Image (tube, rainbow, N blue to C red):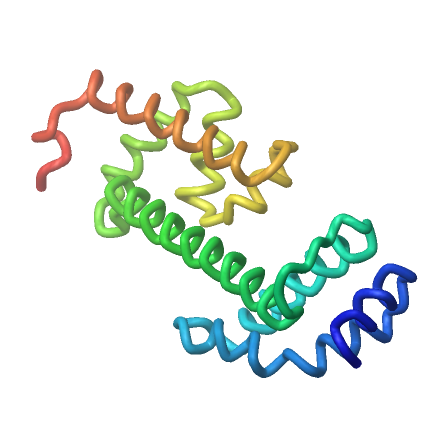
Length: 179
């Protein structure tokens, strides 16, 4: 199939065009992710997401193609993978933030932190407990708390953590945490 035929079929909602794109470009697009520190499953997910974006644009009639389909799909995959890598990087930094509060070797420190969390509002108590003690992801926290999305959950966690920092600093000194 030529690019213009694929676009024509897409505009009619012909899913055979989608199957064709999947089979034709799967290896090329997944190789992009795998060669940039991604797993086979992540590569598959990114490519499927890219196809969905491409399909939605094609079906809506808002797709203006100034390059080959392969180039367009490649750039979508590249952008999606870059966003995923940024998200992973933020998660690693957030996990390191959590480590400064939760030291499994010190029950006393955990007790102090739990007591301070108990002095926060109910929402902050839940968000911080879900994240730091229960180890829930931001996606799950957003779902459990009824937040609009994960960004809302991240913002709330950040603000609650800041309140917790201030509370701990007002009640305790560094020497309270030194062994």
